[in-house]
Amino acid sequence: MTKFGYETTDGSTYRLLLRNAKSNRRYATQAETVLWEYLRGERLGVRFRRQHPVYGYIPDFVCLKKRLVVEVDGGYHFIEDQQVSDEERTYYLKQYGFEVIRFTNDEVLGNIEEVINRIKTIVMNKPNITQQETICPQGTPLLRRGRGRLIIFSAPSGSGKSTIVQWLMSQHPELNLYFSISCTSRQPRGTEQNGVEYFFISPEDFKQRIAKDEFIEYEEVYNDRFYGTLKSQVEKQLEAGQNVVFDVDVKGGINIKKFYGENALSLFIQPPSIEELRKRLEGRGTDSQEAIETRLSKASYELTFSSQFDKVIVNDDLESAKQETYHVINHFLAVSN
Image (tube, rainbow, N blue to C red; front, side, top):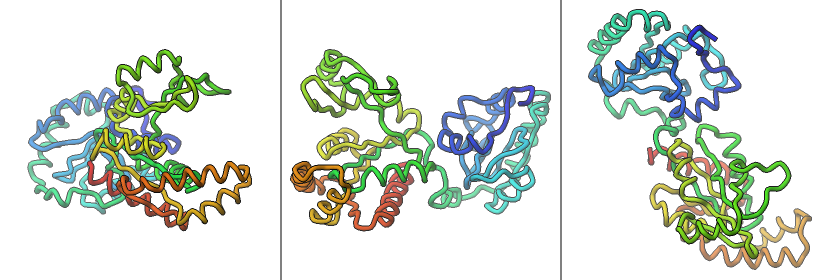
């Protein structure tokens, strides 16, 4: 830690920083806060961004129009999972046409006018880059900027939906995917905590919220056993820049899509056939034959709703289905932003 209470990220927190670049703008160091007051709002004639990912690297400030990166102190940073020095970072960013200028905390706090004049001189003498050239290639982490989006998954039981979702969330943190936190009227189980696995409320409270139209979707599974998605919770997550994931039944997925329209992407994960689904369910060895027949009957019914989703992904080969799902989501988030 420096005397300003600041230390650049280490490997254990890099991916968290990457996923929450927007939120990190709120927790600037003293020197960053001072400098930002002179850079924000195009005060130098061009737009600067804070904590804006650039080709896998998160600089303190960047002007895309001028291809200029401004750093305050440092010591070490990470590009992807690799710790690199200031010199290596400069070389890395130069490969993409960026100029890098660095200041210490003491320089910024001791003589901000000189710091700004140095930045102004560079800005005035660098040509503008066209808007098209400022866009990073597909796959770079620009998807967390601003408000989040919604990704809806629905599928018959045994289609591989949960496997695909878990793979996306564990292997592709750059997509910034977070599960929506649902509300339930049942009691917590084991180590479950309120506001983590679910929001736990009483059946009476749940019914009152239904009457007030506070849910996007809800279901009464058994008498007084409710599950539902609160509009306020989803809005809170979207405002935090999270891309909110819903793992719901087909009717719930359709309702959420109707509510959010173009801000949501609805995906239906489909087995190649009912017979293949039967093989998968029987292969699990966890259900009775009666339970399997019930699941298959329900799956046949759910398949009739597939055309109401934005994209149907047939999980014939799991690895291919994973990659197809990733590319569909990546494209949706890139276009939406």
